[in-house]
Image (cartoon, rainbow, N blue to C red; front, side):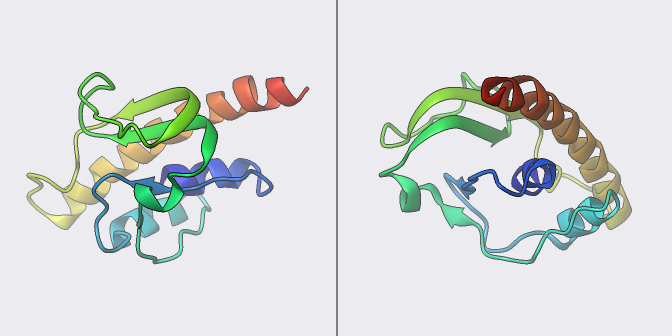
Length: 128
């Protein structure tokens, strides 16, 4: 979701999206909740971070369970600045699809707010 949200602000941004332990598909619920705010997320297979080990990133944005202190970023990932968006995984311990969708909508809104600030206050300010 984070990649699609950030890309919605500026199609010209060079964005790479990968995980340390990626799942084998993009969730249909994530696709649905993003479409609810006009962002199209295509079904795809998430990539593993090792595909981008030779790139030095300006910003590393991590999204996942826990805090940045708990997150183990592999030493092979090179970056200048980092930002972490910590959420409890909504796919663990949900009772039904409606509950999952509501939790994903909350997370979507939080990610949107954080990345909107990041884009307008950090990326655009740096360019200006």
